[in-house]
Structure formats: structure tokens, C-alpha cells
Amino acid sequence: MGEQDAMRQEHADTTATGKAHFAVLDGLRGTAAMMVVLFHIQGITVLWQGDKVVLHHAPLAVDFFFALSGFVIGYAYDDRWGRMGVGQFLRLRLVRLHPLVILGVLLGFASYVLDPLGAPEQAIALSRVVVALIMGLALIPTWPLPNRWTDTHPLNGPCWSLLQEYLGNLAYALVLRHWSTRALGVLAVISGVGLAASGMALGSLDQGSYWETLWMAPVRLCFPFVTGLWLYRMRARLPRIRLGWPLLSAIMVGAMLLPIWPAVGGIKLNGVYEAACVILLFPAIIVAGCHSAAGPITGWLLRACGRLSYPIYITHFPFLYVWMNYVAKAHPTPERMLVIGLGLVPLLVAVAWLADVAWDRPIRGWLGRRLRARRHQRSAFSATP
Figure 1 (cartoon, rainbow, N blue to C red):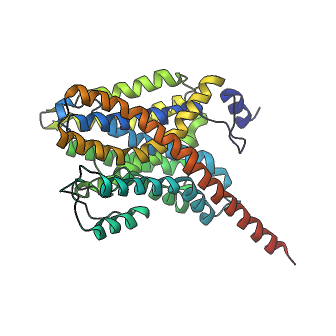
Figure 2 (figure 1 turned 180 degrees about the horizontal axis):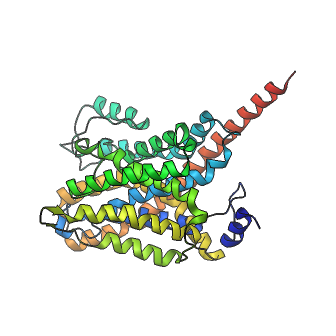
Figure 3 (figure 1 turned 135 degrees about the vertical axis):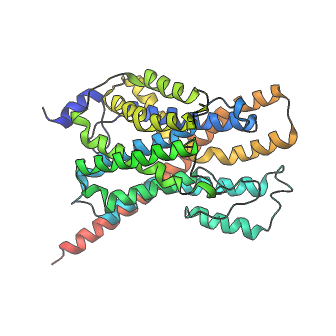
């Protein structure tokens, strides 16, 4: 029995291309996305007072996304080169990622210009916001807007990580796909040392989304993305640990719930801890997740979680900008904040579902058909004597 056949039996279902479907990894992506959403809702509720924040380490979900992306990119595309060129790969990735980038930025633009609680800070020349809109639609960092901290993508803060995702995809297409597994391992070790040193120096890996720490964005990308690709290449030689989605999610949530670690003897233990999560814990979770199976009903649920993880990640923050202004200016009672904060969760899930079924899938389907039609036309033209 070949490896692909064994994987089909182990995971019980396959993708449209016939490859085994990693339902548990899909579910873990959903867990990580929900941790980000809950972190932002609760953090805004307490106006980011450090001792009142609950999910202190939830920003590390982004690093988990990068690692998972490296694994999935290798799995989906490593065996397609030769039948696929760099241009086609980049077009496929744009079709997969950019429709929701556009929607998230448009929602951010609407929340900035229409928020009734945004004045007076957001009462600026419309031309400035339009420039941020145009650059945001292209994922280009732009200068901060008032009342948006110093975010590199002020209309939708999470877009900073999508820019890094694009850079990782580009690096894979141009360079990393040619590298041997050993070379990827060496790069992972070197970048892991850099990540750990940065964490120890800064005391936190929650960096890269602001202009002041923009240099940390590629540092956070490099190790997990390369390691995810290396894990895919090494998957047959790694231990077949099977823990399942509930236990793996509990481990991830537990790691994010731990408090901020203090500095001891000049060593910023919080940075050490967060680097250890990214360098040791997350790869172990991915290894266990790719070997864990799910039943038919559980598998459907986990795939649904995975399908909504990207939409909820990229669309939730424009709504939370409004929530931020409401908390800061309306001064609601703790009871009201609790009720509204809890209500935001199903609202954001519903928005993500609508973004998936009414925006992302129709647009990707249309673009996919256009790309296939162009390839068929080129094939027919090249075959014409």
C-alpha cells in the first residue's frame, strides 16, 4: 500500500484532488482563529489593561497559522511543479486569499467613515482614508490613521499577517521549493535562533503589526513557515502521535491562557516562553494533528471550523473598531459589556459564514473558472499545428 493510500484510509475522506484531508488540522485552525477573536473582544473590553487580559498569548495564533500554512502549501503544491509554473501558483494563491482581503479592507473602510462614535478622532480628510483604502486593497502598508494606533494596515489590522503570508508563498515559489529537506532544516534552526533571541530581547512575540516593530513581521514568519514546510517533507519519518482535536485544542488554549511571565535576573521569561511555544509546541501539535483522525460527523464539524477560520480572522476586526469606540466613549456598565461582548461572538461567526458563502466562494469559483478557461485556450493554441 502506497503512502497516499494509507493516508486516505487514516483520514477517511479526501480533497477534490484526491489527497487525504486533514480534518483535525482544519479544526485546529478554527481553534486558533477563535482564540484571536476572543482575545480581541476581551482585550478591548478591559481597554488592554495587561493584568485584566485573559488570553495573554493568543497573538501566537498567528505564528501557528504561519506554521500550518507552510505544511499545507508543501502538501498541496510540492508534487505539482512541472505541471504548474510560478505564475500559475501565484494566481492560484491570489484567488485563494485575496477576495477576503478585499472584503476585510472594505469593511474596515466602512467602519472608519461610518462609525458614529469615531468623532472627533476619525473626522479627517476623506482623501487620507481613500489612500489607505487603495493601499490596503493591495496589502501595502500605509501610514497610520488617527484612532488606529500605529498599525501598518490601519483599516484592518490583521492584514499585516496576510502580507507576510504572501511573502512566504512567494519565497516558496521562487526559492524554498527547490531546497532539500536538509537545507530547510538548517534554515529552520537559524531562523528559530533569531526568533528566540528576538523574544528574549523584546519580552514578547506579539510584534510586527505596528510600524515600530515592522521588522519583527518577517522574523515571525520565517521560522514557522519554513518549519511547517519541513514537517510536511519529514512527515513519514516523524512519530505518529494521535491525540485528536479536543485534546490538541485544549493544549493550545492552555498555552495561551497562562499569565505573562516576569523577568528574572534580567531574562525576559515571557519572551522565552512564547518562543518555546512557537519553536517546540506548535510543531508538535501539527505533527499530532496531521496523524489524528476524525469521524464523519466530527470531521464535517472540523472542516467547517477550518473553512470559517480565515473569513472570521480577516473580517472580525472592523466590527471591533466600533466596539473599541463604544467601550472607550459610552462607558457601558460591566454587565452591559459582558452581554454585548458575548453577543459579538455569534455575530462575528455569522459575518464570517456570510463572507464565505456569499462572497469568497462565489468569487473564487468565478475566478477559478476563468483561470481554467485561459489554460485550456493556451493548451489548444499550443497544440494547433
